[in-house]
Image (cartoon, rainbow, N blue to C red; front, side):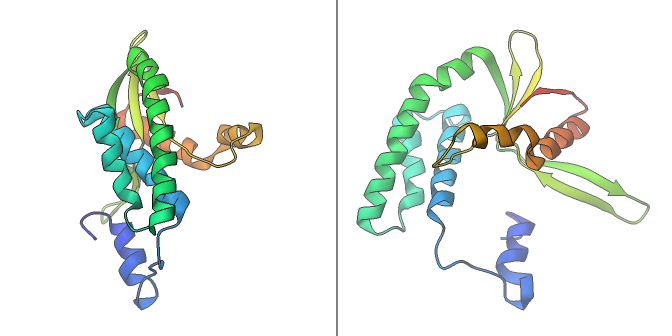
Length: 176
């Protein structure tokens, strides 16, 4: 686990001497993870929509049958519509550079140590029309209204990640 993600290892095994492990994954986290995996497979995995959805559905394997079937159906509907309506627009406007790739952002350093922050942008893409760099995040919610959308204008994760990308890649992020 440490090799995969040191932060996950800390919380899973070391925090408080035993680590914290939930009894089961929260449904919204399962759904979001399935979305991220499927979009990643569609953007860079060379998979068809059906194959990518099949990969994403694996996230729901631990649920009881009724809940699993419900979530798989909702997930599949969302991904089919996204792949048909949004993906072609993204492909026509952007060249995909990095999908779910870790960037190590140097927060500080001295002669003895370097402090790093791991940042994993969902997508870094270059706009084809002018070559500008964009940082895209995939977010899912059950209640996305105007208030929900407005909060992203001042979201700390978005600002920190954009700054981390700019400083690490030495290139201005033109949009999020």
